[in-house]
Each structure stands twice: as structure tokens, then as C-alpha cells.
Length: 189
Image (tube, rainbow, N blue to C red):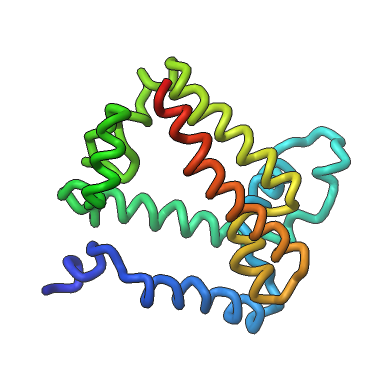
């Protein structure tokens, strides 16, 4: 197996998890930096919106390193999707595939099911709820919690922050409720 084949395979949890976890001590050691993805939207808005909106009136230039971090994620995602893309269908547990087939979801050629996420689906009630309402709720929840899963669950828990523990418990509870109670209703539309 050459290096391209090696890095284009899914990495097991015991490799990817520690690499993500090591991000926290590295950031703390190189300058007490705080990791977070969603806060970058605020930095971008503060840099691009010249209006005198109090929420965007701060020294966003101190967080430039975080913008480079996010740019690296975007570039890495582009490289992975373009040059390291696995042409094989996503492997889905047979029981899940059977359950999803009942909702008309059978195409696993992409990372997200094309039966759910495409332009035609966006103009259906099911697609609108999943993509537009879901996206709004993720944004609202991130703003309400003062951060997203990466900021709270990776960085906040690593630095023993009580609000991050509460936020992470709420993220988990919301995920379980959504996956087991609400998503089946939406998929059946």
C-alpha cells in the first residue's frame, strides 16, 4: 500500500481521535490559543462588515491565526474530496440500510445521501426542514450556547470548563432526540 492509498482510507478512531485531541495542548502550548470553528464566522463578519454593529466591534485581527486554521480545513477538505476521494460507496450497516430504504434512501455513493441532499430535495418539505430549518437551528444553537461542538466539546472539556460540559450534554441529548424521535418523522414526509 502506497502513501496515497494509506491516507485515502478511512482512519480508525484510535488514530483520528488522538490527533484531534492533540490539537488542544498544541494550541495551548504555542500561545494559549482557544480552538473553535463557529467563532470564525463572527471574525469574518467583523472583518468584512464596515457597519458599526456592536457585536462586531472588537479586535478581530488577534484571531487571524484561527482564520488560517479554518482556511486549512477548507483547503484540506478540497484536497481530500478532489484527489483522495474513495470511489467506492460509503459502507453502511445493513440494518441501517434496510431502515433507510423504507424512507427511499438507497444511494450511498457520496458522503451524504444524495436522496436527501440535492437541489430538488431542497424544494420539498422534507429537504427544506433538513437543510434550511436544520441549518438555522444549528446556527441559533451555536450562538445561544456561545460556541459549537468543537469549541465546547473538544476545547472546553479539555480545559475543564463547566459551561462546556453543560453544552456538550445538551448537544448529545439533542442529537439523540433528533436521531430517534424527530428525524424519523421528517424522513417519512
